[in-house]
Image (cartoon, rainbow, N blue to C red; front, side, top):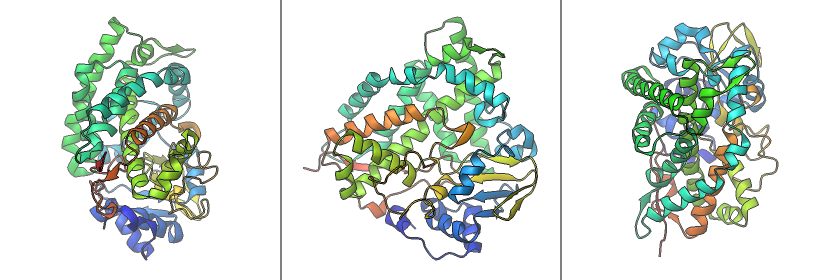
Length: 422
């Protein structure tokens, strides 16, 4: 099963077949999850799963339920509170990297979010605009125009990686190695068979970030990481563990999600010439198209795990205390009860920025959303302005999507295009 246009119409799946597919995270499901989510929305919107890691899990797929669950304090993000389940899924290597605002509840989350928010400000993000444009131009200057080029490694990944590394203050000669370790985490997935690779990559990243934070403490450079080293609020500064873990989540999530999202956007616009034409009318139209693509094919398919701190009933389904909960952002963003013709990409869809859940909802709304939007706007606007006749190097239905079990992101395995078909 390929993604492409197969995802535009739901296949006839029973709830049992859909639950089995989501539980197994098979290659077929990974290549095209949309029919499975459609079947679950219809017949099992709060679906108990039996994934290979063996921890009882519930998957939420309807928009209203997903939005409420993202802000429900009964569903905890503090995975240390479900440490046995955590160990079974991730092993031991992730613990030191998950002491951050993404995996915490109030009041700790409130404190960490406030410290990060006071340093990772909209003003700091906006100050990057000129540099993001410069990096974009330099990368496109190096891309060959006479033959097929895989945009993922040549453009989609190096752009947000360079931006987040410059924002944090990662030295240029150390970025490639950090990217390789991050890629192992993103592309290996979180299944039991992947644990050994994850432990090595995460251990290397942890050791590197400990050293980098120490260097920023002794030789501050004005970057975001230096600011976090010295940042304090009324409750004090970040602990050493919190600092390293915060650096990790900003580095990892700060470029992987955007890289895959740029690729998803290019693919879908090139697959639909009518939508591309509408998106390219002006900057406002492109910004609207970007928000619709966030809804239509977000790179963050599911939320990170939550666990029920008490028995929770959602849509007449009991989620028992201690069970894990995942929220399908992809499923919710294609809920026909919320979005008209949700399986159609409509770049003129009204009010989509205010409604899609690509950046989450509630206290854990993505702190990096302004940076992701800035990068998407400059990347896509510049790419299509410089190469208006760009085309996919193959048929849209032949696109290959990542099919590794339990991946961190939803994205293409490759994106071959011809920048100048003439």
